[in-house]
Length: 392
Image 1 (cartoon, rainbow, N blue to C red):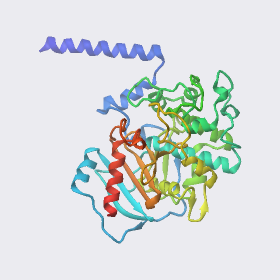
Image 2: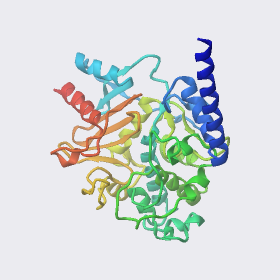
Image 3: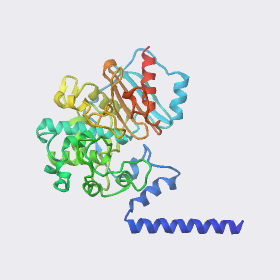
Image 4: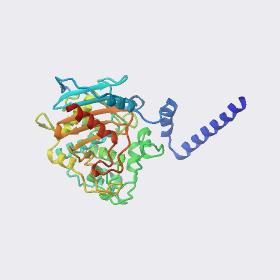
């Protein structure tokens, strides 16, 4: 037994030394933080409750809360729905129609005032802020070159990239999008402390405006453009243009790469499920809020439209607008989503909003007779089905 323990001890020590040598020689010091807050805590990756391990910018609640109405009827889910939701470690589910909450449930210790990570659902808010800056004239056109706002984009093919290309996810940059590779830009941007240097050092490897390739770096670049154009940090601008105007009930928190650093615009906006639903209402109403225009219809019409691009599967782009996911089935659905199954779903035909937060998501549909479903997670359609059956 002693020899066996000694043997495994040597293996562990050897691995420990090799990992440290690799981290030091490669300069990937963010891996220390990543390893500490995941594997050494019994986790396999980021969670929706990572707020306190990062610095953040606080976004105050609105001075006047928008109150959701409660439906007069009592709605419930089938037993099989409850089992499915528990299997995917759901933490909240809201189904809202005509501004009334039909169904609201929270699991485990997650409550109505609990904030959780949006992950990539935050990307859509960045795009909405681009619309605000455009409406204000701070950004003159979506076809302006990125180089007008960011000096590092003035040569080597990057001078051809426009704001529109970033919104369309067709920049042609070399960002590696991966939720599992600890050496990817995603891992470095999540756990690292120099986000700006990371995204500004990207290289152009394809002609922009041709291919749809989902990259978190595009969203981060858009955030820097908004900040440069408006001379405000992203959290301040979000509060002024959106959060204060949609009656947000609770403060939100946007994780930063360091103290007083840059917001991780590609992810990491912590808010309550009801406040995520208020964002959904703004999207559902195409930028309007109680007869007030927050974002112009001119921008929102482009926002919902699918750019003429080829996807990674070499099929036409039916799934993505300007930083908003689009399902062009019957009925049409526009939604924000995060890696662990964070959803803000809007169904205009039914005047419905669905918000789901949790710890797991099903895989994307890859091959299907319905071309409009390709690229959308399988569980999206289960949430849509739940809401539809509830109405019926």
